Amino acid sequence: MDSAQEEHGWYSEEAATFGDRVAAAREALGMSEDELARRLGIKLKTVRAWEQDLSEPRANKLQMLAGVLNVSFRWLLTGEGEGVAAPAEGPEMAAEVSTLLTELRLVKSQMVASAERLGVIEKRLQAALRESGA
Image (tube, rainbow, N blue to C red):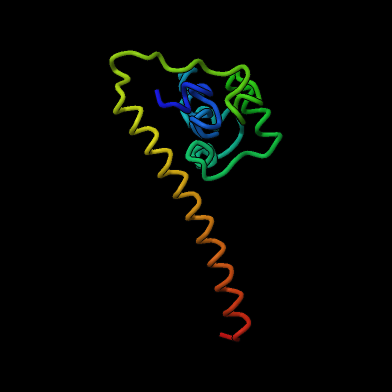
């Protein structure tokens, strides 16, 4: 377990993303992404976007999500409160696995930031093209 996980808990904001917590809670119930989507009345691609941290639900869906997953609203957002227990530590949870998970989360957050930056640049380019009459 890395220092952020030790200090703040496995599913804390420092150690896990919103999407990580959604996926963990869903998997803890043995529920598929498709089943979760059906129970919430949303599209499968919406659940996948949440779990991949590409989007987040609106408040009303967030409350429904917490109810369906049997976790607290607060836990989904921050990792604090009633939620899913941390995975059992053991020989299978080698230090290298923890390091790889940390690296994966870092790359994932960098990709999200890059996608947001790309959107801003694209909007600026469109505005510049409109202004130039192109």
